[in-house]
Image 1: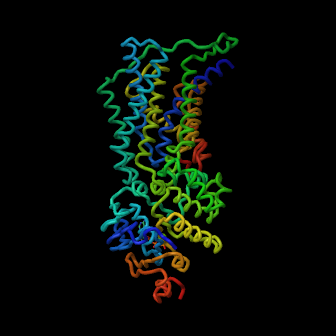
Image 2 (image 1 turned 120 degrees about the vertical axis):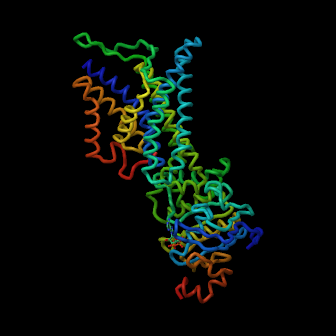
Image 3 (image 1 turned 90 degrees about the horizontal axis):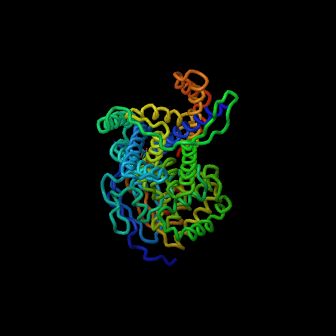
Length: 305
Length: 243
Ligand SMILES: Nc1ncnc2c1ncn2[C@@H]1O[C@H](COP(=O)(O)OP(=O)(O)OP(=O)(O)O)[C@@H](O)[C@H]1O
Ligand SMILES: [Mg+2]
């Protein structure tokens, strides 16, 4: 029981991070019907900005952990948002009316280019960060002396994910911007006839997705303390899987998909062979898609944004 | 009927051609809508009526010729900028946002209007179409065809347009609802002085309501004149008024 609880906590933490990345895939898909395969690299860049930011703030003598976190997260969101905006503006927008394969191939190329760019500027070796937020609670002790812990970092990841998801949901459901995003997703021509600036709305969607991925990147730096330039590839693939699992185009689906994936990986590693955790994750994906081709929360006609 | 300055140009379309790729849909079209005027455009299926209204909105933008709104050239502007200058469109097929409520559809129509006027404009639309007031929180996709048409027109009105484009507002509606819609169009024009360009299959109703009309045949203007004259024109009677 204690061991089970620990895997649950670990799985939810990982799942929250996947979910935050998955939102970027699902929002962009919802609004322009394209999978942005370079999104994983934006997350990786967010992680690097986070790491560099934390080291730099430490170097100039800022010791308050909450202040560091706020500054670094805002900084990473801003810089990743700029990358997201630039990518859409320079690469995807000119290709928007091109055959579907063109932006897809460009995304893959861009993904490689961004990886190489980070490798060249930051070096190829693994970067590490000394643990910053230590301590936590021991929730219970199993009979065999196994202690279930919930550390501060995990609480931070949960809380921040909940805050961001609530904020995003309110933005999409209640604000003029969110209404414009839903309108563009459903019927861009009609949205434009209503006076919505479709290009700007799409840009904003990329920026939001990139900013959330950057938060996930900072979380990963804090949580695992090791990153390298390849970080975005597998995480991007996992988050994309989470988006598909939840129903690509559905925001709650992205989060649910992320949590399911995180839990499967965590429990599989805990109770079976960790080496096969990805096999288990993808087996679940296949199973879900066979039963529900549009994903857990997806609609047959695809729920957009 | 006291119309504000009929004659001054709201919309001037000069020699406009448009095409979908290689398919030519409009060929050297000239058409004007005066301030406060209702102009109807009639023509057979595939004549290019929908294309002309969409070309005014920049989708597709004109291949040749010029379109001016209140004297300003809008030919090359993007759609949302044209909307910002005072053009609102209730397009063919209504294009209601099916997953949004009636209220949200109307809010989208008000994207460019002053937020301070929202409550007043909403009130006007709901007074014009009381049926929408009862269904304000219903999803657009679950409305009846007539209700959807009311939302499409109401959504366009929420923008406080100077020029209202209406593409077959009577399509598929029962005679009683058609009368309601046409009455509403007349009311919008009388009360707000809104200029209206109305595309209709229902030439009978349209010519009764409009001040002037144009007949579009295969992408070209074949006839134009006062609505009352067109209504008794033998060619028009044969082709569009069922003899
Ligand atoms: N998106 C498009 N791509 C290619 N051709 C098109 C497109 N839309 C319209 N057309 C063609 O352009 C011509 C004019 O079409 P349009 O829809 O403007 O006619 P219409 O007068 O509105 O007809 P209806 O009364 O049936 O609505 C038609 O020949 C049509 O096939
Ligand atoms: Mg038409």
